[in-house]
Image (cartoon, rainbow over all chains, first blue to last red; front, side, top):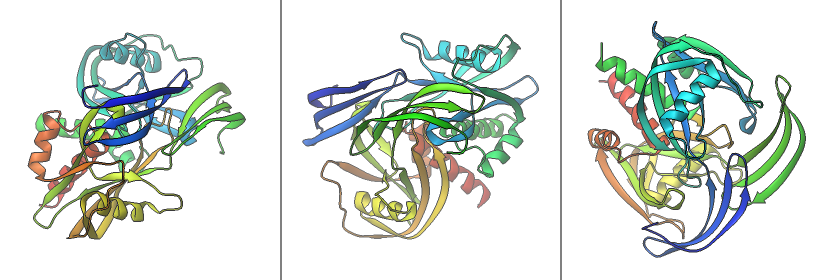
Length: 179
Length: 179
């Protein structure tokens, strides 16, 4: 908190997935404001690439947007967990695939205007099968698609999730630069 | 609400930027769950390209992530406002540039796991100067950078905002396909 002076902070809600704060602050430039802030533990998402160059996507019902959403395997960081560990864990839990190799792709803010969520994107390869361990409140379909199929899904609007679109664009760059 | 049965819904907070609901639902596949959902009016962001092919970026302090963040000009939809109108308005307010042309680029979910925010990305051209009208609680720096400069900022981790990274990747594709 080097840039801001926090005049007051009120935790309005403390939940399972997120918390909500209402803070009164003086920001750089003397801006006095009340800020509603969603506090989140951070997320990981994994672009998993099989040995035969297929991408692993999952489809699940997402209540906030009332839709079945095609996404990368993803999830929240557990308390004290490192992003890479979380990525490995979520990939195994959701898809039953354990990666021998996993590399960071990109770390970014999902919605810095009202939420502190940081997304850590990884690319996982050298996958081997392990048992899935879905959360009790998750029902997940797993699919393997070629990069071309995934790109076509994105073009047709069938992939409409930020992290998945960003990972596909990074994969496109990678394929261009490593023929 | 075709896919879900909502058993109960409680509005925990109703605010200026967002609201928070705690809903009990029965989702497809018989999943019974409590869901914490951030309700948001939706957002727009604008990739504005000047006549001499510069991109218009803004930098502002974002309290949730306690950082000065380089971003596309962006903002929330006002009640009843169409995304295209909002894009035009936000671009004018934040940068003092009014576009004669504005086209939709991409619409996506920012964080469908806990938030219903939809982001509408636009590309704006044929810009002319108008007075800026920043919100009272905003302090915004405006910069014009080349596409190459913006790409270098992204590679160095100086751009770490999802919508801005996605817009840059779309612009890269566009430049590849229209030499």
